[in-house]
Length: 82
Image 1 (spheres, rainbow, N blue to C red):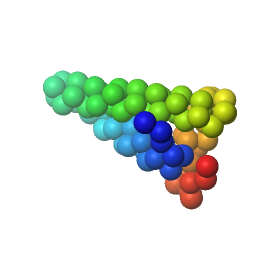
Image 2 (image 1 turned 45 degrees about the vertical axis):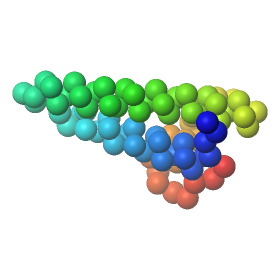
Image 3 (image 1 turned 135 degrees about the vertical axis):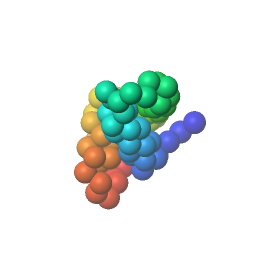
Image 4 (image 1 turned 60 degrees about the vertical axis):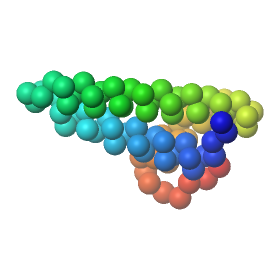
């Protein structure tokens, strides 16, 4: 399934939010919640990686460059380009 740059940015933001949840649960006495959050983050991160790879191939761009652009845009929150 082809993804636009904007969709990749949204996916990265969702993965980043899931990672923040994992970080918030780290060290707390709630292992089941931590495990669930960690698995959700891992799955989202894998989905982003696969989508970035596919997008880069379709656009004829280097994967690492696309990943960098997506992460930068997701974390800065500016208007997406691509």
